[in-house]
Length: 553
Picture 1: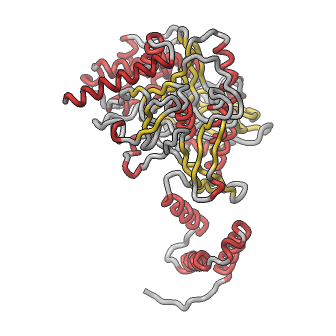
Picture 2: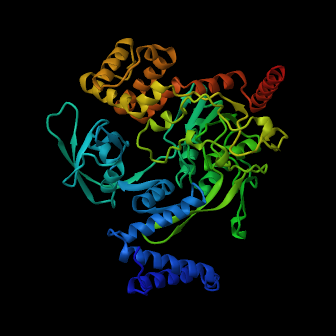
């Protein structure tokens, strides 16, 4: 090892000065007297300078410093992050609910960025883009092997500007050129709603600035159709803005009711959020559907309705992401997202789960603006592992009480009033979804056949799918394929992708929900127990029966 005398270089001095000036500008006198922080930063600056000057290979010090920041935040908790470029932009999109672009959902398929579906009413939709179109060139650059993120970065831009790209479409010999003018694209928080018999259904995919207005408009429409009850589906909803969660909750709460409160290390992190408007809904029973990937703002909403006895919560115990992240902008393209407080429901339940004691690898959060319309559906099922769906049985969790005195459970996440056993992926289902084979088959089928709105995945189509899998060199176990649970799932998934690609979001959601066991069970419960009081009584009866079975064992 070669020793060199220590020396102050121009680079080191500039780096240290920049850090100190930034600290003083940001934190003022709080940092001026903290010799430890300034000393540590001086050492950090010297280390970076020595690496830049003497390391055996040339190093990108900018990248090195960024990695150091990322690792520092990662060590704090899973939700604190350093955001740059597209990551920062994506965060802003998910919170604002809009961006500048051409309006199509894309994903990486067969080595190219591929259109999953255009968003209705956007430039891509009006231009006739369709599911399965491969984007082979953007602004003169070949896209083979590109990530989805790289393609999105070029397709997005300021409204009013143009973007040119080439599309290869199944059935056409030559790629087609499109030149589209970017517009403001609104990402809907409520991607689907509808009536199923006498009951309304609303899917909330994330909580953004747009959510309250979208939901209020949807409620007014469904109430105009004389619905007798409402199902609000926040399964696989990763959350979003705290403000959006409180605004949505107060649509169902009376004025001055506590929705959520936060506690943190600093006094300004300790806040209570009350409803400021009287509820607008008409008193019909509300069922909230949760699953293991419902998180953050979804849990605030479900917890508020549960604690005030205004919603019957069903499904699985939610994710337990009960921390507040504050975004601190560092520049026009960089920011840090830092955990600053924890959420508590009106009854005092801490939503946050200690994921050190829980296998979070089984929980996949679907990000707002996901690559495919079917991602929300596909992510509803965890893979089959033989484990229980929750970390602890209800009797092991701390007990809290709702406004009417019903027992609810703490311990992280929102425990449903009535728990459903989760539908689990078999290995075959998981592998088919992972490789996007349902989507690819749907594109191929629609290219070769006329698809109508009464499409059904018949036995012949299932055989065609098996042939397709063989052509794609997928190792298919005939015995597994023939099992009823796999055939039912494969039938649903083929129909899901056919309707998504050819008839859009609403058609896809309706097809899937008609075959969704959890949703169908909710409809049965509402028909049999048409008031919240009867639903709560049924849930208590089921808990008593379960306790008796456990005691008998």
